[in-house]
Length: 218
Length: 221
Image (cartoon, rainbow over all chains, first blue to last red; front, side, top):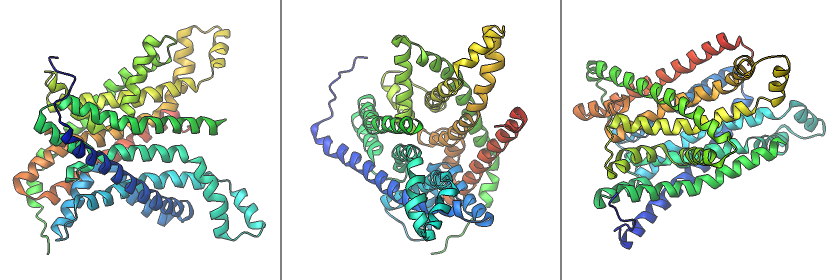
């Protein structure tokens, strides 16, 4: 290789890298939170509504899931720019990533709601619960527990997909590393560090997801 | 401010866009086929009792599943470049997609294989079937049924993720769109058309997959 293992990256860069790390964590958390809340609403609507609403809602979600995220990001930020309301990369990225997350979470939660047997809801109603009480105390807790591993899977893919927000200029981890690479010309060390960061976040969570899944299967 | 759409330029460039779409398909089909072959080997290695085989397979799978695809493409394009291995954008994106596909499909195949109880193997043997017959007629058909849908999803994922070629200047649909819009500055128009093309490609793949599955499995899935 002819390359030293000690990177001549100076300690002065650590603040810069840390900003990238924090920004990746930040936008991922925002997208996962908003995406989960919206996905819960969409999943519930899809599990409850009639055919027409379902088809319409399904169609919109389908577009979000069938167009590459990178194209969605470019389209959205160009569109709001062309309309004369440019947003900063964080805001634009959060909106697109949250809606994208919602599209996947919606399907997960829909499955969760539908997995709760109707007889349980009927039993709740006959005990004098109102409709919303059966939703809140029966369908939500039971349905959500069933889809927790899938939820975690979507959340993990959002953390990884957040790297794409770099295309519209958000300074997340991959973009900061890209800038460091162009200055230091040491792509290998920097990229390995970046990969390690994602791995350290993602791997334990994916193990935990598998563990929960196995525990629920028994 | 009012934005005036100009679609003419996009229609003029349609042949280039369609060529980009063709490269996208070509790229994702190749990444899928090669990924499947590697995944079969990795799945066998992962199920091996010897750690010499199972450990490298596990490492491959976990890295592929736990790092962003964009990272893998950068690794293939810039990272390997630092080692003196210079890949063209096409080969870089292709190898990154193969790497990820193989990683995810390994788990799919392993899960599919392990979902068939061993008793079926023993039962077929006791009926006088040879090992090859057991696999050919009993195990593989059932396994294929179980891995069919995850495989379709993985293929769609490859199509969507091949759009990352835009970042290393590839000439697949996204990269081509990027290049054409930079010549004309009709960014919105070009990317809207690209989005529609991705949507059509994805729907086409899913529709064909479901038609094929109806034919193959005669509805019982």
